[in-house]
Length: 114
Image 1 (spheres, helix red, strand yellow):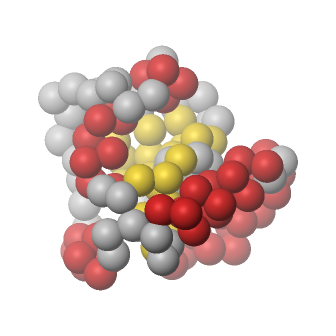
Image 2 (cartoon, one colour):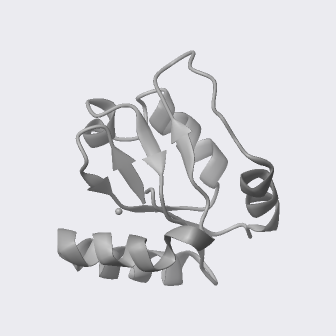
């Protein structure tokens, strides 16, 4: 799940979270986020495979905005948070964020891409 500059939340699924975030950062991943940069990764979770990731993405997209924000409040302290900005802007990662990404499996729910 990503929180956009305007406060909206974008949800999607990917099997390569780092690459997908770079595409969002470059304005090439989604027309929705392209006009709302910078975006911040606020939630991600592993999935057992593509099918499971897509089912979870669909369930998250069906949540109301209030329900998504409540989910973020409940789980916010345990997820990776990373700013993804426009082209040429460096990303600021803490050691905890780097360790979190190192533990992530191949199929991730982006939360970025809520």
